[in-house]
Image (cartoon, rainbow, N blue to C red; front, side, top):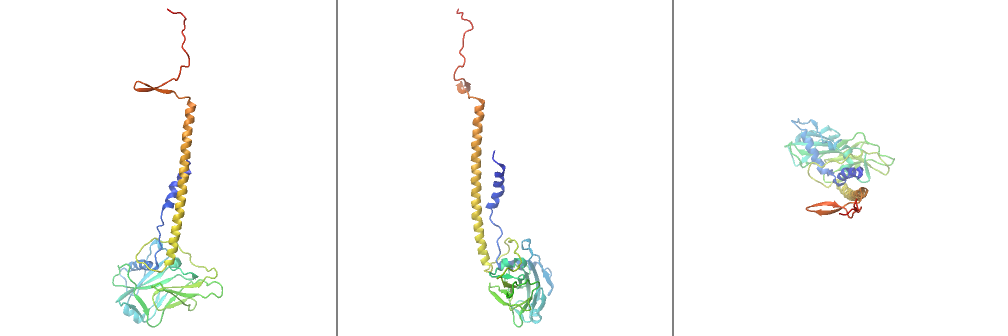
Length: 315
């Protein structure tokens, strides 16, 4: 009989081998659009100047998002100090002009290196983002970020829990990611503060000439949100290569399993046929079938015992 473990291989392994990966990594711009949506959901009857923390889906566990609604004129005249790790100075303006705006805060936590891969560098802090959006429609999705720039002092980012930079001689750097995909490096202020003149994403990193502790990336989330962008493109290309390689390997394993299954079925059929022949031999020589009227009946091929008369008397 066909071994039962072959059936387990077929029914439990084949779905895994033939399934295509469902999780695709979003681009950084698509992630911005997704987080904008969840940040705006937290603004239910919002009060100006209050910070509201949003709730992200389970496939982005660890990521933090917040929203802060302000009047443009008030932001320019007063600034806003203490929006999470960000200190926004006086003189910040947005283009195009809007009456009210929402400042969306990102903390990418363990997802930092996944969405913003930077070859040759290790992040010593999570990537933090600050983006401005028009607040005229708080139910809008996939909004285009406003162009937020400073006219006097820079925006300060005060990081907490900065990891050590590693061996002596390695200098941590402030890393800025612009919305256009640009990357800029600046010196760290007081070991934990970075500055910038535009909105975007910020982190502190160091060249990893030696192993440096860094947050480990979490599993790949499922696709959501909209939009697209060039940021994170290198990682997406490498992921596509791995998907192709995985599909090829899975296809080869599938062919091997099917060959094994075919061989086992063929062997089983041979054993079954041989078993039937042995049973027929054990039962004896089969009788020859002959037509008797409209039916078939077994007949002997020859008479085994010749008939003889019991009495030799002939009438």
